[in-house]
Every structure is written in C-alpha cells, then in structure tokens.
Image (cartoon, rainbow, N blue to C red):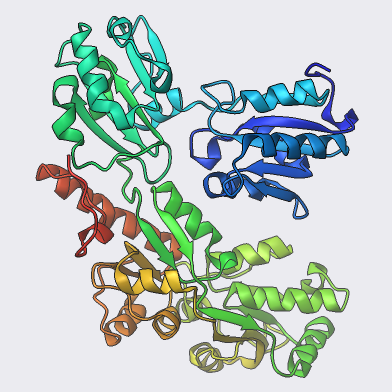
Amino acid sequence: MSPANHSTQTRSGFVAFVGAGPGDENLLTLRGADLLGRADVVVLDRQAYGSLLRHCREDVEVVDISADAAENSVSLKTIQAAKAGRTVVRLCSGDPSFFSSVTDEVAACAKADVDFEIVPGVPPATAVLTYAGIPPAASAPEFRIVDAAQTDDWAKHAACEGTLVIYNGVADAVPIGKALIAGGKPDSTPVAVTSDGTTTEQYTVVSTLGRLGPDLKHAGMTEPALIVVGDAVGMRDRLSWFETKSLFGWRVLVPRTKEQSAGLSEQLRSYGAVPEEVPTISVEPPRTPQQMDRAIKGLVTGRYEWVAFTSANAVKAVREKFEEYGLDARAFAGLKVAAVGDATSRALVEFGVKPDLMPTGEQSSEGLLAEWPPYDSMLDPINRVLLPRADIATETLVAGLTQLGWECDDVTAYRTVRAAPPPAPIREAIKGGGFDAVLFTSSSTVRNLVGIAGKPHNVTVIAVIGPQTAKTAEEFGLRVDVMADKPSATALAAALADYGAKMRHAAVSAGEVPRRPSQMRRGARRRVK
C-alpha cells in the first residue's frame, strides 16, 4: 500500500515519520504536534527530543531508541504496532528527507504493506543559519547543501558561487577548508561553524578558510554542527539575534513551584535563558478544616463586606472549597474583592472574579493598605473582612485594616512547609556554580532554598524582588547583584535581563567573547574566539 492521503482517523493503524526540527522544540510543525497528540506509540531518541512528549497523551507508549538504536529493531516495533491498529509517530532529526537515516525504515513500512506518512520538519540547513544571523540565500545565485559523509571530491563544491552548507563535517572541518582552497576557493572566503544550532547551547565560530584551523583549535565543536561557507557569513555582525539575547544560555534557578513560575519562566526564555523551577515550599491543607468551612459559610450568608486575597495559593484554596460545596464564582455576588498583586489577580480572573481593589504601587500588604478605604458606617453595611491566608502570614495587613476600622477574620486557608530537597545534581549545581543566576521572590524562598539545597556559589548572580528579600539574602551571606525596581516577578526578570545585557556589552566592548557567570568559575570550560 502506498502512502495515503485520506484522513488518519480512518486508518486502522499507520506510521508517521515526523521531522522534529533542528533542535528548538518550538520549531516543530503544527502537523507534527497534531500527530503527536493522537499517537498511541512514539518512537524517538528521548535524550534529544524528550521535551516534545509534552504534546502527547499521558497514556502514550514511548519507545526510546537512544537505548536501542538497532535499525531493524526499530522498524519491527513500528510495523508491529501499526499492524495492531495503533498510530505510531517516529520522530526524526531535522527533516526526514534531508540526509536522514530513516529511509530504510520507511521502505520497511512500504514492504510490509503498512500505511505511512512523511511529515517534513524545519531543516537545520536553513534554521541554524537563520538563528546564527546568516541569511541562507541573501543576494546569492546559489544555495548548496552537502553531506560531508558522502563527499570525496570537494573541488566541484569550491565552484559554488553562493552559500555552501555542509552537514556532518565538523570533525573534518580543517581538511575540508584546505580542500576547498585547493579547489579554487580564496583562503579569505568567510566561514562560520555553528554547533547545537537553535538551542540555548548554540555556539558559532566565525573565521575564513585560511584560518579555520587555529580558530577552531580550542572551540570544542561537536556534532550536531553545520559549516557555512560564503559571503553571507559576513552579514552575521548585523543580523545575529539569537546568540545576542541578554541572557542567552544562562541557566537560571527559579525557586518556586511550576504553577507559580510558569509566566516567569516563559519571560526568562524570551531573554534566551534556561529556567529551572525548584520548589522551596510545599502547599498543604490546614490541619483542621473547620475554620475554612465556617469562613465559606459566612461568605455565602453575607457575613463579610470584603474578601482580601494575598496570594494565588489563597485563591486556589478557596476555589477548592467552593468546588467541594458545589459553589462557583457567583457566590462572590455583592462582595468586594481585593487582590495583592498581578499573579493573585490573574488567579481570581481565571476563577471568574474581577478584583475591585488592587495596589497601584507596591504589590504587598503595605501597598494594599495604602489603597484600602476606611470603614464608613454610612456606606458599609458590614464591617467585616475575610482574609484567607497562609499559616505563616504576617500581621501587617490585619493590624492596618483594624486601624482603618475594619474587623478581620484571619483564616488559615493553607499551610506552607519546606519542600523536599531537590535531586543531587541540582544541589551540586547550586553549590558548585552550575547556575548562572537565581531569582529570589521572597525572604522565605531564600531561607528555604539554603535550607534544602545549600548556598548558591559566589559566581552565581543573586537577583531579589525587593529590599526585605535583599536583607534576608545578605543575612545568609549572599551578595545581592540585582534588585527589581518594583516588587513583581516580571520586574525582577526584566532587571536580570538588563544586568545580563550590560555584562554582554562590556565584554564585546573589551573585544572579549561574552561569558556566562557559570563559565567564570574555576575549572569551567572557556570557549575562545
């Protein structure tokens, strides 16, 4: 049976050979993501493409070929699964049609009368060049792609008048350069060698054919890599956009839970960083639920004029109680709702509640009090405020509201306990300087991180959300390098990006290759120009 065009939903079982792209997981095609979402079986090199499993169902069967790379074994597994009526996705490096090793697997499916589909991927030949700031075919009469593993005669490629892209050649880059010169290419012809293209490990060495040997000598280039030969390389100084991001390649520790840090991590990725979430606290229900039960009953029966939320966790705790009692956001009708900051407000909006009051300045209990109206018996029929909070919450808000004439029901909505220590490699990276920066969003994150994992290495950039967190960090002997101009996680990430940009600019101005903080510790590998 030949490859069919009809919908995969009507097939009894088939194999899709999906190009995974050049390395950046966000360059997966929409068709590839759709097929992964419907796959019963995924065959892949988990070490290289494991992150793409996020597109799959939880019950998907994963066949990791990094542990079993025998071609016949892979073909047999995919064919057997398809014959059993299952949808199989075979993830392939780059584009399955570009110098791919899966051709024999495709042929095996055809021979076994198994329906199959080939989904193109973004090829490294164009994507890596673009990420390196080299236009693949700008004003060039020719764009030629060569597999070094299948090439013996370089003289014919020396005649290429445009951009020459060489796959699988980094180990023989110097001999290839000499062969191109011998074939007639000027030794002054620009060359770029890029390894780990489109990932945050991307690294590019720019040279000429004549200087390729000394320039690559200490660069530590390994596959996957591309060699680019031609005048287009000269445009990199103007068009480089990926490797010049302010936090490019920085490994940043975010000591918060995944739920709390999702937006922060996405912001850090936009600056080129590699965020790693390490929870420092665990949120647990109150030891006795009766207090929260009474509070929810009072909320429904009109006991309160206001409900003040000081964290997204408090919103989550109340929402879960609502669901337990079969209530929804309509129970807030007639109540005024306050939120301490942006994250808490977002959690409320997701719940279906729009806050009536938020600080316009500092997002803290003090900032909330600065906006809070005093109790007025003529305007406010009820003088009671519900504060569902953590068991370790400070008394600042209660004291301030009491001074304004309000009565407060300060209710423990959840408990915060210190999280379990992170895995040993994370602890070693924290203490050994493997992280470039750590973001502290509260004093408790400082105390808890040091408690469960130890103090960050002195080369690690310490970024804090405000003066109180800075004071706590200094009490633990940490040097504070960055402080947000306002107490929000967004401002903290932006401040770190600005710090990274200044470091990069200083290095470039001094004629040096920009280095991450972790590369400055003793024993770290130093890349040279």
